Image (cartoon, rainbow, N blue to C red; front, side, top):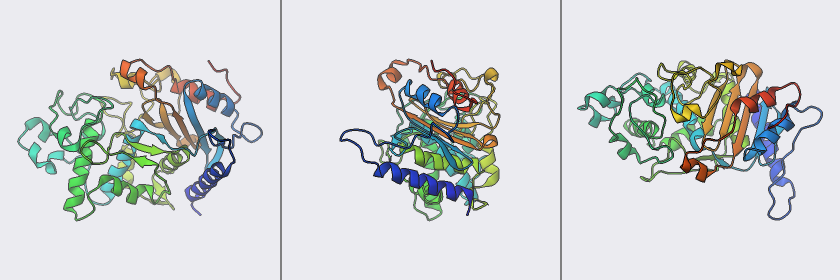
Amino acid sequence: MWKGQAMIGRLLLLTVAVAATPVAAGSAPAAPVPTAEGARPGCAAAIAYSDAHKGLAVLVIRNGEVVCASQDTARPHELWSGTKSLVGLMAAAAVQDGLLALDERASDTIAEWRDDPGKAAITLRQLLAMTSGQPSAIGRPQGYADSLRVALTAEPGTRFQYGPTPLQIFGEVMRRKLAAAGRDADPRRYIERRLLTPLGVTVGEWRNGPDGHPLMPQGLVLAATEWAKIGEFVRMGGKVDGKPLVDAATFAELFEGSEANPAYGLTWWLPRATPSDDPVTRSTDITDPAAGLPADLVVAAGAGDQRLYVIPSLGLTIVRQARLDVAALLAGRKSDWSDRRFLATLLAPRSAPVD
Protein backbone atom coordinates (compact mmCIF):
# COMPACT_ATOMS: atom_id res chain seq x y z
CA MET A 1 0.00 0.00 0.00
CA TRP A 2 1.18 3.53 -0.80
CA LYS A 3 2.32 5.19 2.41
CA GLY A 4 0.07 8.20 1.76
CA GLN A 5 -2.94 5.89 1.47
CA ALA A 6 -2.05 4.31 4.80
CA MET A 7 -1.80 7.79 6.32
CA ILE A 8 -5.23 8.71 4.92
CA GLY A 9 -6.63 5.57 6.52
CA ARG A 10 -5.14 6.53 9.88
CA LEU A 11 -6.52 10.05 9.58
CA LEU A 12 -9.93 8.59 8.77
CA LEU A 13 -9.74 6.43 11.88
CA LEU A 14 -8.78 9.51 13.91
CA THR A 15 -11.77 11.39 12.47
CA VAL A 16 -14.14 8.52 13.26
CA ALA A 17 -12.72 8.18 16.76
CA VAL A 18 -13.26 11.88 17.41
CA ALA A 19 -16.81 11.75 16.06
CA ALA A 20 -17.62 8.71 18.20
CA THR A 21 -16.24 10.13 21.45
CA PRO A 22 -19.10 10.91 23.89
CA VAL A 23 -19.18 14.58 24.88
CA ALA A 24 -21.30 16.69 27.13
CA ALA A 25 -23.99 18.77 25.46
CA GLY A 26 -22.56 21.96 24.03
CA SER A 27 -18.95 20.89 24.43
CA ALA A 28 -16.45 20.36 21.63
CA PRO A 29 -15.65 16.78 20.58
CA ALA A 30 -12.49 15.46 22.17
CA ALA A 31 -9.60 14.22 20.05
CA PRO A 32 -6.72 12.06 21.24
CA VAL A 33 -3.84 14.23 22.42
CA PRO A 34 -0.61 12.18 22.41
CA THR A 35 1.42 14.34 24.76
CA ALA A 36 3.01 11.53 26.82
CA GLU A 37 5.23 8.64 25.72
CA GLY A 38 5.46 8.38 21.94
CA ALA A 39 4.39 11.95 21.34
CA ARG A 40 6.56 14.56 19.68
CA PRO A 41 8.51 16.22 22.54
CA GLY A 42 7.35 19.75 21.69
CA CYS A 43 3.71 18.77 21.16
CA ALA A 44 2.19 20.03 24.42
CA ALA A 45 4.12 23.31 24.30
CA ALA A 46 3.20 23.91 20.65
CA ILE A 47 -0.49 23.29 21.38
CA ALA A 48 -0.27 25.64 24.37
CA TYR A 49 1.32 28.34 22.21
CA SER A 50 -1.38 27.89 19.58
CA ASP A 51 -4.15 27.98 22.20
CA ALA A 52 -2.71 31.19 23.64
CA HIS A 53 -3.11 32.77 20.19
CA LYS A 54 -6.75 31.87 19.47
CA GLY A 55 -5.85 28.36 18.36
CA LEU A 56 -8.50 25.77 17.56
CA ALA A 57 -6.58 22.78 16.24
CA VAL A 58 -3.05 21.44 15.86
CA LEU A 59 -2.28 18.23 14.00
CA VAL A 60 1.20 16.90 13.25
CA ILE A 61 1.94 13.98 10.92
CA ARG A 62 5.47 12.54 10.82
CA ASN A 63 6.24 10.04 8.10
CA GLY A 64 2.55 9.23 7.81
CA GLU A 65 1.93 8.80 11.55
CA VAL A 66 -0.03 11.17 13.79
CA VAL A 67 2.45 12.28 16.46
CA CYS A 68 0.62 15.28 17.91
CA ALA A 69 -3.06 16.21 17.95
CA SER A 70 -5.13 18.72 19.86
CA GLN A 71 -8.89 18.76 20.17
CA ASP A 72 -11.04 19.85 17.23
CA THR A 73 -8.92 18.22 14.53
CA ALA A 74 -12.08 16.74 12.98
CA ARG A 75 -14.15 19.92 13.06
CA PRO A 76 -14.18 21.87 9.75
CA HIS A 77 -12.81 25.42 9.84
CA GLU A 78 -12.47 28.14 7.23
CA LEU A 79 -9.03 28.12 5.59
CA TRP A 80 -9.40 31.66 4.25
CA SER A 81 -6.39 32.26 1.97
CA GLY A 82 -5.15 28.76 2.69
CA THR A 83 -7.53 27.97 -0.19
CA LYS A 84 -5.14 29.70 -2.60
CA SER A 85 -2.51 26.97 -2.37
CA LEU A 86 -4.99 24.42 -3.69
CA VAL A 87 -5.37 26.57 -6.82
CA GLY A 88 -1.66 26.13 -7.52
CA LEU A 89 -2.13 22.37 -7.33
CA MET A 90 -5.11 22.70 -9.68
CA ALA A 91 -2.85 24.46 -12.18
CA ALA A 92 -0.38 21.57 -12.02
CA ALA A 93 -3.23 19.14 -12.69
CA ALA A 94 -4.42 21.27 -15.61
CA VAL A 95 -0.93 21.22 -17.15
CA GLN A 96 -0.90 17.42 -16.91
CA ASP A 97 -4.32 17.36 -18.60
CA GLY A 98 -3.08 19.51 -21.48
CA LEU A 99 -5.39 22.39 -20.61
CA LEU A 100 -2.73 25.07 -20.09
CA ALA A 101 0.94 26.00 -19.73
CA LEU A 102 2.23 28.29 -16.99
CA ASP A 103 3.92 30.71 -19.36
CA GLU A 104 1.10 31.07 -21.84
CA ARG A 105 -0.61 34.44 -21.93
CA ALA A 106 -3.94 34.72 -20.17
CA SER A 107 -5.17 36.68 -23.18
CA ASP A 108 -4.95 33.48 -25.23
CA THR A 109 -8.08 32.53 -23.29
CA ILE A 110 -9.40 35.93 -22.13
CA ALA A 111 -10.06 37.36 -25.59
CA GLU A 112 -11.22 40.74 -24.28
CA TRP A 113 -7.71 41.45 -22.99
CA ARG A 114 -6.04 41.23 -26.38
CA ASP A 115 -6.51 44.90 -27.23
CA ASP A 116 -5.08 46.04 -23.87
CA PRO A 117 -1.25 46.13 -24.19
CA GLY A 118 -0.71 45.68 -20.45
CA LYS A 119 -3.20 42.89 -19.80
CA ALA A 120 -2.35 41.14 -23.07
CA ALA A 121 1.14 40.45 -21.67
CA ILE A 122 0.00 38.79 -18.41
CA THR A 123 0.95 35.11 -18.09
CA LEU A 124 -0.78 32.44 -16.05
CA ARG A 125 2.40 32.14 -13.96
CA GLN A 126 2.11 35.82 -13.03
CA LEU A 127 -1.50 35.36 -11.92
CA LEU A 128 -0.49 32.52 -9.60
CA ALA A 129 2.57 34.44 -8.33
CA MET A 130 0.50 37.58 -7.59
CA THR A 131 2.71 39.60 -9.94
CA SER A 132 0.16 40.18 -12.72
CA GLY A 133 -0.20 43.88 -11.90
CA GLN A 134 -3.75 44.04 -10.55
CA PRO A 135 -4.41 45.42 -7.06
CA SER A 136 -6.90 43.78 -4.70
CA ALA A 137 -8.98 44.51 -1.64
CA ILE A 138 -7.84 41.64 0.58
CA GLY A 139 -10.74 39.58 1.88
CA ARG A 140 -13.21 41.17 -0.53
CA PRO A 141 -13.11 39.17 -3.74
CA GLN A 142 -15.29 40.34 -6.58
CA GLY A 143 -16.72 37.97 -9.18
CA TYR A 144 -14.76 36.58 -12.10
CA ALA A 145 -16.02 39.10 -14.69
CA ASP A 146 -15.45 42.09 -12.39
CA SER A 147 -11.92 40.83 -11.69
CA LEU A 148 -11.15 40.86 -15.41
CA ARG A 149 -11.99 44.58 -15.49
CA VAL A 150 -9.59 45.61 -12.69
CA ALA A 151 -7.05 48.09 -14.09
CA LEU A 152 -3.32 47.44 -13.80
CA THR A 153 -1.29 49.46 -11.31
CA ALA A 154 2.04 47.81 -12.16
CA GLU A 155 3.69 46.32 -15.19
CA PRO A 156 3.13 42.54 -15.17
CA GLY A 157 5.97 40.69 -13.46
CA THR A 158 7.43 43.69 -11.64
CA ARG A 159 5.52 43.97 -8.34
CA PHE A 160 4.07 41.52 -5.82
CA GLN A 161 0.46 42.51 -5.06
CA TYR A 162 -1.20 39.94 -2.83
CA GLY A 163 -4.95 39.60 -2.98
CA PRO A 164 -7.95 37.83 -4.48
CA THR A 165 -8.11 39.41 -7.94
CA PRO A 166 -5.43 37.34 -9.75
CA LEU A 167 -6.88 34.03 -8.58
CA GLN A 168 -10.44 35.02 -9.45
CA ILE A 169 -9.09 35.75 -12.94
CA PHE A 170 -7.40 32.34 -12.95
CA GLY A 171 -10.76 30.84 -12.03
CA GLU A 172 -12.26 32.41 -15.15
CA VAL A 173 -9.35 31.13 -17.25
CA MET A 174 -10.00 27.61 -15.96
CA ARG A 175 -13.75 27.96 -16.52
CA ARG A 176 -13.25 28.92 -20.16
CA LYS A 177 -10.58 26.29 -20.81
CA LEU A 178 -12.71 23.52 -19.33
CA ALA A 179 -15.71 24.63 -21.38
CA ALA A 180 -13.61 24.77 -24.56
CA ALA A 181 -12.45 21.21 -23.88
CA GLY A 182 -16.04 20.05 -23.56
CA ARG A 183 -15.75 19.39 -19.83
CA ASP A 184 -17.70 20.52 -16.79
CA ALA A 185 -16.63 24.18 -16.59
CA ASP A 186 -16.85 24.52 -12.81
CA PRO A 187 -13.27 24.93 -11.42
CA ARG A 188 -14.32 23.65 -8.00
CA ARG A 189 -15.68 20.41 -9.44
CA TYR A 190 -12.47 20.05 -11.45
CA ILE A 191 -10.42 20.34 -8.25
CA GLU A 192 -12.68 17.86 -6.51
CA ARG A 193 -12.44 15.33 -9.34
CA ARG A 194 -8.71 15.70 -10.00
CA LEU A 195 -7.39 16.22 -6.48
CA LEU A 196 -9.72 16.09 -3.51
CA THR A 197 -11.53 12.85 -4.36
CA PRO A 198 -8.34 10.89 -5.19
CA LEU A 199 -6.80 12.13 -1.94
CA GLY A 200 -9.86 11.17 0.11
CA VAL A 201 -10.47 14.76 1.25
CA THR A 202 -13.92 15.50 2.67
CA VAL A 203 -14.94 19.12 2.08
CA GLY A 204 -16.93 20.86 4.79
CA GLU A 205 -17.95 23.70 2.49
CA TRP A 206 -16.64 25.77 -0.41
CA ARG A 207 -18.29 29.16 -0.71
CA ASN A 208 -19.24 30.90 -3.94
CA GLY A 209 -18.46 34.51 -4.78
CA PRO A 210 -20.99 37.25 -5.55
CA ASP A 211 -21.35 35.96 -9.12
CA GLY A 212 -22.22 32.41 -8.06
CA HIS A 213 -18.87 30.99 -9.17
CA PRO A 214 -16.66 29.20 -6.63
CA LEU A 215 -14.16 31.44 -4.87
CA MET A 216 -10.56 30.66 -5.77
CA PRO A 217 -8.65 32.82 -3.23
CA GLN A 218 -10.69 31.75 -0.19
CA GLY A 219 -13.88 29.96 0.78
CA LEU A 220 -12.73 26.39 1.45
CA VAL A 221 -13.71 24.86 4.80
CA LEU A 222 -11.78 21.78 5.94
CA ALA A 223 -11.07 19.92 9.16
CA ALA A 224 -7.41 19.67 10.16
CA THR A 225 -7.48 15.96 9.32
CA GLU A 226 -8.58 16.80 5.77
CA TRP A 227 -6.15 19.67 5.21
CA ALA A 228 -3.39 17.34 6.38
CA LYS A 229 -4.19 14.98 3.49
CA ILE A 230 -3.37 17.78 1.05
CA GLY A 231 -0.17 18.47 3.00
CA GLU A 232 0.83 14.82 2.84
CA PHE A 233 0.25 14.83 -0.92
CA VAL A 234 2.65 17.77 -1.18
CA ARG A 235 5.15 16.06 1.13
CA MET A 236 5.08 12.99 -1.11
CA GLY A 237 6.02 15.10 -4.13
CA GLY A 238 2.57 15.28 -5.72
CA LYS A 239 2.36 11.51 -6.22
CA VAL A 240 -0.20 8.82 -5.46
CA ASP A 241 0.85 5.17 -5.58
CA GLY A 242 4.21 6.43 -6.80
CA LYS A 243 2.65 8.08 -9.85
CA PRO A 244 2.30 11.85 -10.33
CA LEU A 245 -1.28 13.01 -9.86
CA VAL A 246 -0.24 16.36 -11.36
CA ASP A 247 2.47 17.51 -13.78
CA ALA A 248 5.77 16.91 -11.97
CA ALA A 249 7.68 19.86 -13.42
CA THR A 250 4.85 22.28 -12.71
CA PHE A 251 4.49 20.88 -9.18
CA ALA A 252 8.15 21.69 -8.51
CA GLU A 253 7.69 25.22 -9.87
CA LEU A 254 4.94 25.91 -7.34
CA PHE A 255 7.68 26.19 -4.73
CA GLU A 256 9.96 28.63 -6.56
CA GLY A 257 9.68 32.31 -5.66
CA SER A 258 9.50 35.18 -8.12
CA GLU A 259 12.02 37.98 -8.55
CA ALA A 260 9.42 40.38 -7.13
CA ASN A 261 8.92 38.22 -4.04
CA PRO A 262 11.24 35.23 -3.50
CA ALA A 263 9.16 34.29 -0.42
CA TYR A 264 6.06 33.51 -2.49
CA GLY A 265 5.95 30.80 -5.12
CA LEU A 266 2.88 29.93 -7.13
CA THR A 267 0.29 30.20 -4.30
CA TRP A 268 2.69 28.83 -1.63
CA TRP A 269 4.80 30.74 0.92
CA LEU A 270 8.51 29.98 1.23
CA PRO A 271 11.22 30.68 3.88
CA ARG A 272 13.18 33.11 1.75
CA ALA A 273 14.52 36.60 2.35
CA THR A 274 12.55 39.06 0.25
CA PRO A 275 12.61 42.72 -0.76
CA SER A 276 8.81 42.77 -0.79
CA ASP A 277 7.55 45.06 1.97
CA ASP A 278 3.81 44.59 1.59
CA PRO A 279 1.70 44.02 4.75
CA VAL A 280 0.91 40.38 3.98
CA THR A 281 4.54 39.37 3.48
CA ARG A 282 5.46 41.26 6.65
CA SER A 283 2.82 39.31 8.58
CA THR A 284 4.96 36.16 8.66
CA ASP A 285 8.43 35.77 10.11
CA ILE A 286 9.40 32.74 8.02
CA THR A 287 11.15 35.19 5.67
CA ASP A 288 13.68 36.12 8.36
CA PRO A 289 17.09 34.74 7.30
CA ALA A 290 17.95 34.26 10.97
CA ALA A 291 14.96 31.99 11.57
CA GLY A 292 16.95 28.87 10.74
CA LEU A 293 13.95 27.12 9.19
CA PRO A 294 14.35 24.10 6.90
CA ALA A 295 15.00 25.27 3.34
CA ASP A 296 12.34 22.93 1.95
CA LEU A 297 9.55 24.26 4.20
CA VAL A 298 6.47 25.33 2.22
CA VAL A 299 3.41 26.97 3.75
CA ALA A 300 -0.24 27.47 2.86
CA ALA A 301 -1.46 30.40 4.94
CA GLY A 302 -4.77 32.10 5.63
CA ALA A 303 -6.19 34.98 7.65
CA GLY A 304 -6.34 34.37 11.38
CA ASP A 305 -3.04 32.49 11.15
CA GLN A 306 -4.43 29.35 9.52
CA ARG A 307 -1.41 27.30 8.52
CA LEU A 308 -0.44 24.17 6.63
CA TYR A 309 3.31 23.61 6.97
CA VAL A 310 5.03 20.89 4.94
CA ILE A 311 8.68 19.95 5.58
CA PRO A 312 9.60 16.97 3.37
CA SER A 313 13.16 16.65 4.72
CA LEU A 314 11.75 16.04 8.22
CA GLY A 315 8.81 13.95 7.04
CA LEU A 316 6.42 16.49 8.55
CA THR A 317 2.97 17.81 7.71
CA ILE A 318 1.65 20.28 10.29
CA VAL A 319 -1.81 21.86 10.44
CA ARG A 320 -2.68 24.78 12.68
CA GLN A 321 -6.17 26.35 12.70
CA ALA A 322 -7.45 29.31 14.72
CA ARG A 323 -10.31 31.72 15.31
CA LEU A 324 -10.23 34.72 13.01
CA ASP A 325 -10.39 38.03 14.87
CA VAL A 326 -12.50 39.90 12.31
CA ALA A 327 -12.43 43.19 14.24
CA ALA A 328 -8.63 43.15 14.40
CA LEU A 329 -8.41 42.27 10.71
CA LEU A 330 -10.69 45.13 9.68
CA ALA A 331 -8.77 47.52 11.92
CA GLY A 332 -5.48 46.46 10.35
CA ARG A 333 -4.02 45.25 13.66
CA LYS A 334 -1.13 42.82 13.19
CA SER A 335 -1.37 39.46 14.90
CA ASP A 336 1.35 38.56 17.40
CA TRP A 337 1.44 35.01 16.06
CA SER A 338 4.94 33.81 15.20
CA ASP A 339 5.39 30.98 12.70
CA ARG A 340 9.03 30.84 13.71
CA ARG A 341 8.26 30.41 17.41
CA PHE A 342 5.52 27.84 16.82
CA LEU A 343 7.76 25.70 14.64
CA ALA A 344 10.75 26.10 16.95
CA THR A 345 8.58 25.03 19.89
CA LEU A 346 7.17 22.04 18.06
CA LEU A 347 10.51 20.90 16.66
CA ALA A 348 12.45 21.42 19.89
CA PRO A 349 13.89 18.24 21.47
CA ARG A 350 11.91 19.12 24.59
CA SER A 351 9.19 21.60 25.36
CA ALA A 352 10.13 25.25 25.11
CA PRO A 353 8.58 27.99 27.26
CA VAL A 354 5.48 29.67 25.87
CA ASP A 355 5.04 33.44 25.92
